[in-house]
Length: 110
Image (tube, rainbow, N blue to C red):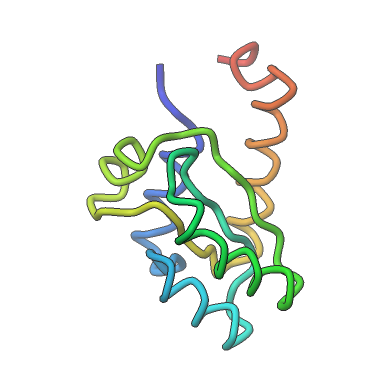
Protein backbone atom coordinates (compact mmCIF):
# COMPACT_ATOMS: atom_id res chain seq x y z
CA UNK A 1 0.00 0.00 0.00
CA UNK A 2 1.36 3.40 -0.95
CA UNK A 3 1.47 6.05 1.76
CA UNK A 4 0.10 9.12 -0.01
CA UNK A 5 1.21 11.53 2.71
CA UNK A 6 4.83 10.35 2.68
CA UNK A 7 4.84 10.25 -1.13
CA UNK A 8 3.62 13.84 -1.30
CA UNK A 9 6.22 14.92 1.25
CA UNK A 10 8.92 13.35 -0.93
CA UNK A 11 7.63 15.28 -3.93
CA UNK A 12 7.53 18.44 -1.84
CA UNK A 13 11.16 17.91 -0.81
CA UNK A 14 12.27 17.37 -4.41
CA UNK A 15 10.51 20.64 -5.30
CA UNK A 16 12.55 22.43 -2.63
CA UNK A 17 9.50 23.39 -0.59
CA UNK A 18 10.43 21.78 2.76
CA UNK A 19 12.51 23.03 5.67
CA UNK A 20 13.59 19.90 7.57
CA UNK A 21 14.37 19.99 11.29
CA UNK A 22 13.35 22.09 14.28
CA UNK A 23 15.68 25.06 13.76
CA UNK A 24 15.08 25.32 9.99
CA UNK A 25 11.32 25.10 10.62
CA UNK A 26 11.44 27.88 13.21
CA UNK A 27 13.54 29.99 10.84
CA UNK A 28 11.07 29.32 8.01
CA UNK A 29 8.21 30.59 10.18
CA UNK A 30 10.18 33.67 11.27
CA UNK A 31 10.82 34.51 7.60
CA UNK A 32 7.09 34.04 6.85
CA UNK A 33 7.81 31.24 4.37
CA UNK A 34 6.14 28.45 6.33
CA UNK A 35 2.57 27.48 5.51
CA UNK A 36 2.32 24.27 7.56
CA UNK A 37 4.28 22.43 10.26
CA UNK A 38 4.23 18.63 10.39
CA UNK A 39 5.83 16.46 13.06
CA UNK A 40 6.37 12.78 13.79
CA UNK A 41 4.33 11.12 16.51
CA UNK A 42 7.47 10.12 18.40
CA UNK A 43 9.25 13.48 18.10
CA UNK A 44 10.60 14.71 21.44
CA UNK A 45 8.17 16.93 23.31
CA UNK A 46 11.05 19.13 24.52
CA UNK A 47 12.26 19.66 20.96
CA UNK A 48 8.74 20.19 19.65
CA UNK A 49 7.75 22.82 22.22
CA UNK A 50 9.67 25.79 20.68
CA UNK A 51 8.44 24.82 17.20
CA UNK A 52 4.81 24.82 18.35
CA UNK A 53 5.28 28.10 20.21
CA UNK A 54 6.67 29.72 17.05
CA UNK A 55 3.83 28.19 15.01
CA UNK A 56 1.28 29.72 17.37
CA UNK A 57 3.06 33.08 17.26
CA UNK A 58 3.30 32.94 13.45
CA UNK A 59 -0.27 31.66 13.04
CA UNK A 60 0.90 28.52 11.22
CA UNK A 61 -1.04 25.26 11.62
CA UNK A 62 0.83 22.26 13.01
CA UNK A 63 -0.19 18.60 12.68
CA UNK A 64 1.02 15.28 14.03
CA UNK A 65 1.16 13.16 10.87
CA UNK A 66 0.87 9.87 12.80
CA UNK A 67 4.12 8.51 11.37
CA UNK A 68 7.32 7.74 13.26
CA UNK A 69 10.57 9.63 12.82
CA UNK A 70 11.98 6.52 11.13
CA UNK A 71 9.14 6.41 8.59
CA UNK A 72 9.45 10.13 7.90
CA UNK A 73 13.25 9.99 7.67
CA UNK A 74 13.18 6.98 5.35
CA UNK A 75 10.66 8.69 3.08
CA UNK A 76 12.63 11.94 2.85
CA UNK A 77 16.13 10.47 2.83
CA UNK A 78 17.18 12.63 5.77
CA UNK A 79 16.86 12.29 9.54
CA UNK A 80 13.70 14.19 10.36
CA UNK A 81 11.13 14.60 13.12
CA UNK A 82 9.61 17.95 12.21
CA UNK A 83 9.34 19.90 8.98
CA UNK A 84 7.92 23.06 7.50
CA UNK A 85 5.99 23.06 4.22
CA UNK A 86 6.67 26.26 2.28
CA UNK A 87 4.10 25.98 -0.50
CA UNK A 88 0.35 26.59 -0.14
CA UNK A 89 -0.64 23.98 -2.75
CA UNK A 90 1.37 21.20 -1.11
CA UNK A 91 0.17 22.30 2.34
CA UNK A 92 -3.50 22.26 1.34
CA UNK A 93 -3.21 18.79 -0.22
CA UNK A 94 -1.34 17.44 2.84
CA UNK A 95 -3.94 18.84 5.25
CA UNK A 96 -6.68 17.23 3.17
CA UNK A 97 -4.91 13.86 3.21
CA UNK A 98 -4.29 14.08 6.96
CA UNK A 99 -7.91 14.96 7.65
CA UNK A 100 -9.14 12.14 5.37
CA UNK A 101 -6.89 9.70 7.20
CA UNK A 102 -8.14 10.87 10.59
CA UNK A 103 -11.71 10.26 9.43
CA UNK A 104 -10.69 6.85 8.07
CA UNK A 105 -11.48 7.86 4.49
CA UNK A 106 -7.97 7.62 3.06
CA UNK A 107 -7.78 3.85 3.39
CA UNK A 108 -11.28 3.45 2.00
CA UNK A 109 -10.11 5.08 -1.25
CA UNK A 110 -7.07 2.84 -1.74
